[in-house]
Image 1 (spheres, rainbow, N blue to C red):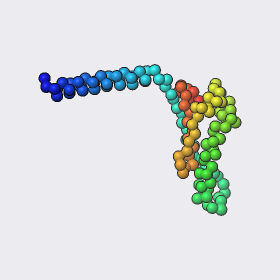
Image 2: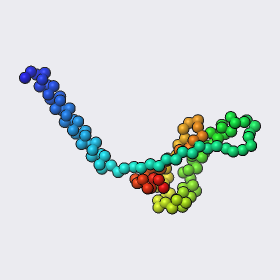
Image 3: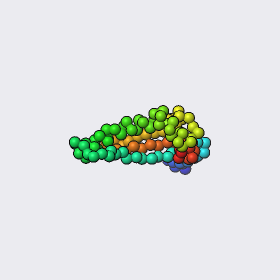
Image 4: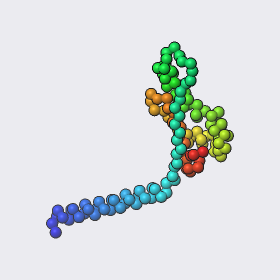
Length: 125
């Protein structure tokens, strides 16, 4: 055998060993890692009224300026307590707050509320 063939064989064997170790590590991570489930709802905010001095453009600008405030309401004690009571959840306010994610795409009047939990039932509640 030539030296070149020997080096190629070593590289191939090391590559196979590395792939095997990587596959085992990936499998172990999937098997031992606790799954996380998420439930997400999106809400488009709007205002109803008899018009404004600025017209439709003013109403859109006003609505979009309020979206961050609406999102912040979702993590207040009053809102979380109402959700827990209305949905008869068996979790604490602190846990719900930690599992809750509120976001809004920039320059939209859309609010996305998502809850992550270790079970599908908890996240859907």
